Length: 101
Image 1: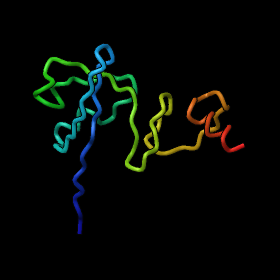
Image 2: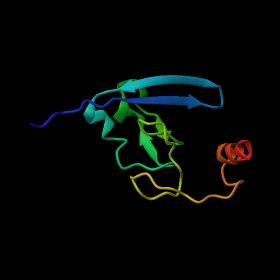
Image 3: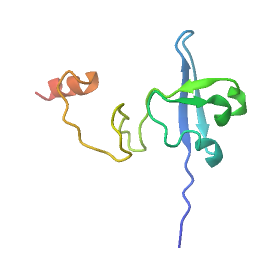
């Protein structure tokens, strides 16, 4: 038997100029399709996500999967990969390496 899995996505929308921030949870599959196959720095029409954001354009600045692994710009695969990075490549990984030593 085939089992359908309902997916929901949580979005953190922020406007750095004013410091405003809003969290939005979308569970409508038709609205989520606007985010599929998008990469970091790509733009999404706000009206595709919610009528509340009609006329806005959002820029994707990051994210993570269900297990908490972060997105990285420049990794052109939908699968998880192991990357060999120098200590100064990412601040979070550089501090983790320093703490491990």
